[in-house]
Length: 181
Image (cartoon, rainbow, N blue to C red; front, side):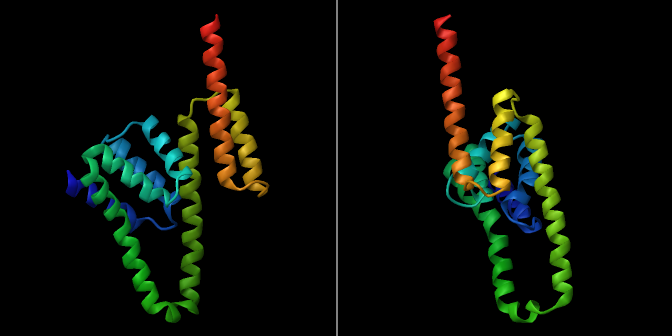
């Protein structure tokens, strides 16, 4: 199982360009759909926690999933698997950066990769939205958070914190209302 965790996250890290957000659909595909290590609900929770804690979302997600499957060893191997490809690519780029920097074909390739990464991120957002427990509050938080982030009115971390506080407050009010009835 440790080798499977390592190899799965190694492939995710190796073949996903664009950072952690671009990895989300691949992590979902392997962890939820293929291996059934976690449920869709757990996946949404992992993404929420991984986004709101320090560190890259892919590393945080790999660490959590690895821990759930095989404890500390699982965390280590899943995290190592997702990190090694990036380290190799960064070392390779560092060695040849000056040669690549002015190459027009490299620039064209990065333009195309950016479009593909944007589509992957949008796809992940749509998939996550479809799985959300939808009510008027979640829809309102989604719209307000999107507006604040789109127009850079509030840093993302504040949107996450405010969303969490509002969600907890709403649940406490609902729970108290049910207990008083």
